[in-house]
Amino acid sequence: MSEPPGARLSRVEVAGGEIAYREEGEGPALVLLHGFLCDSRCWRTQLAGLSSEFRVVAWDAPGAGASEDPPDTFTIGDWAHSLAGFLDALRISTAHVLGLSWGGILAQELYRMDRPRVSRLILADTYAGWKGSLPGSAVEQRMVRCDRDSRLPSTEFVSRWVPEMFTEAASQDLLDEMTAIISDFHPHGFRLMAKSSAETDTTELLPKIEVPTLVVSGDDDRRSPLSIAEQLRDAIPGAELAVIKGAGHVSNMEQPDAFNDHVRSFCLSA
Image (cartoon, rainbow, N blue to C red; front, side, top):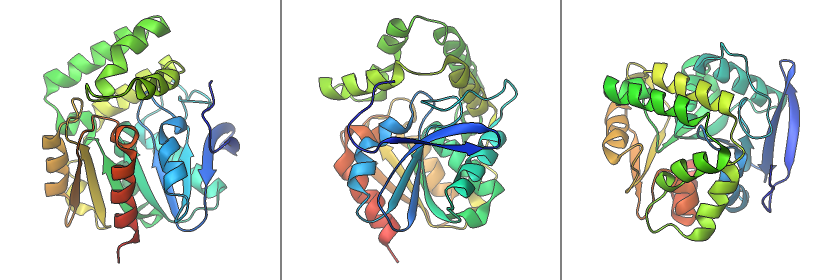
């Protein structure tokens, strides 16, 4: 796995398995949860840009990055339990929790399971689960594609997936950075994360969320369009919506300064 500059990779034992993570800064904990083809490297600019105000922690979920693969039976609830154990191991009792795409689904599940753990919730380019935000036919098409593509050679897989994460204006440096990350994806973990997305529907949870919530959306997100962000904003009491101009699905990488500004202002607000 290629290493970017910045926060070094650490490891911690959780429930008999190793979880890898990166950490920078001191202060209130800000926990970053990546999407299903990424790992903690996708948060490079948040680890650097937000660590002056927060203790920024980005994990490699089981089935991603330098962490071990989970069992075949793993569900979104199991990932939430694993995340809670990870936070216990790092002695983080409460945190601002920021989830991107699949990580946003996981953030909602953590809130469902362990509400006192989450002080603020940031849902970026995500869903109420695929089941809760997409037509059944679209969910089925995604599942078929994920299963099929997960078995492709890495170079062909990357060429199909990297471009749709960003706008057409994305720089070659950005595409190269994401290529390095996605080239290391775990086929097994990817399939399980896709399955968990397809099986999850958080629509009944959204009106019950009682912590301050920020919904973030790239204005050119082709995987989780603005209409889904508006669905989340409208369903969660008092939620705010921040639209990142010139950003696609991985808005934190494509427009890191704007993304960080929104997150910083939200987490520091009274």
